[in-house]
Length: 305
Image (cartoon, rainbow, N blue to C red):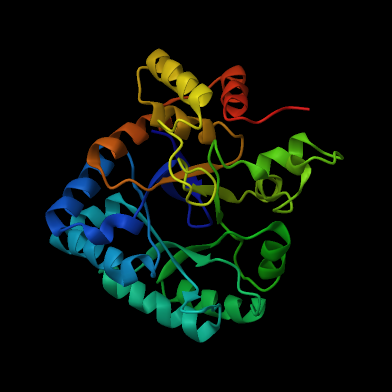
């Protein structure tokens, strides 16, 4: 497993992360087994959000930590806030209230990272900065980041923050590559040339912002997994061949493809299956060649100019 240094606090976090959106449907024993299996395989990064399962995902995870407090020092805990029914809310009052709720449900005294969950058009950077200062000074949050923001939104937010943005969590998979496509098709008139994100990958590299990829096995926006999907025969054949070559699963190769991009990358998996998180963890030890990376990109149906 590879680890990266996260934010100003300098804590180490695994490049493979466990997304906790679906843990709400598990009982304590299942959740405990999953968390311990992840840690045993080097996955120390756990990604939550206050809306996952209406807070139940955090409650279940909190029960695991409460049952064995020694686990807290072994994990990097991240959660997100900002989504409310029918609106996004980055107000100072709401951020502070949301974090208190998160900490209570997770049964911990601090988060290693807090992300703002989707952009709020009514965001006041200075107000967010005040909330972050309070949370940091109290020790409730060590580092801060965002989710699904483009470069201009991050730049605007950063203008009011006392700390650098540590991470941006965005959707990316072999079957969802708009952040890459327009870079290959500069000054062309085809659909892949459309800049849909303002060059977020390049911005994150320039500003040393960690790129966290969500839905790493999905087709588009929750279009189902591409692994084993008959719509992607060439891609699956190649992934299976490479999996055999590296002696891992096809999913491991899919995660390794994301990690091969030369930014500070983290892959947020969505599995709650102990065997699959163990398989995902192996991606942290694989570095695909440049040729293999491009072969996979093209096998997904993409084309180079």
